[in-house]
Image (cartoon, rainbow, N blue to C red; front, side):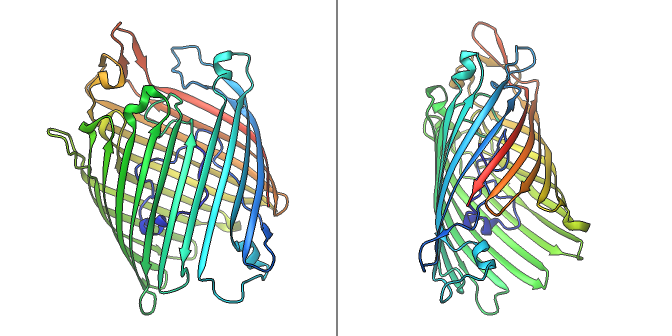
Length: 436
């Protein structure tokens, strides 16, 4: 799905932990949604409208995520994304010297986006993949600069892209997550305490995968302490409940507890690491649970000419459509470089070593059996992008994206037909983005 640029406040609670939660934010196309401009100020009030539209044309090498044993169908794609944000003064305005008469007691952002996707192909089956994706997000902060801050947030997404690389098919789903985060910064501000909760609904519009409908809740508590000028330690505890409305055997109450530290060690090198324990706590009798170490580590290099390189590793577990859980061990790299004036380059990629435990009864997912009692995947992703910010409201770019899943696992129909789930998908795009 398209990557959400709205900064949800719950991320503060996971400052030293990857904020992936229960739904990977995965995107087989361009990683850029839009870049917000200075906006139109509403009179003398500290409120700004941000309209914009982005158009992309490109090519998808594998529309249906088909394995190489089948005829692979590619197609040119046109994507048009219109968006409108409304909120308090953005950083661009503040940098120009604009401000309200006093520190704001409230800041908020309401964002909407509509994407229309058209496949420019003579193949009717490919044409039928045309779709409309929707996004709406709200973030409200009360006393954002005070010793106590309360943030309320909600995000809604309607997308046709695969949920999290588990399965290749495109199925439409509606996802909503809302909640709150309260933070307290007593005394000198070295210590920050937080408590929050969020509720999410994941509903599939396609009846073939409604067995994957879920409702979940997750509470978060954290503490951060700055014990050196550039060093922060953290403790985060997350506990929740997740139910599959049509698969009660997959109900779980996952918990995670992690301690971490992040530091800028020199002017050119920083590092962050956290380690802890996670348990998926399967609630069904005889259900398999993840119970092991979870961790993440990043090394950040601040190179000459504004370049930045990040190397990292993380390990976490997630709920699954087809099993009690899956665990990812991921290695990744990210590189950003301002090449010349207004031209920037971005590259990121990674490899996930994925293992599933507790596969569901194959009849639940409308198959007769599996090729193996275990499922292990290696998932690759790569994104490269060049972007020119011509003005503060106009940018142009080109991007290349790769996603691939390599696995021997197969679903088997009653007829004996084997259905492979491995695939490789390339896409390239050129983009014009008007965002004010």
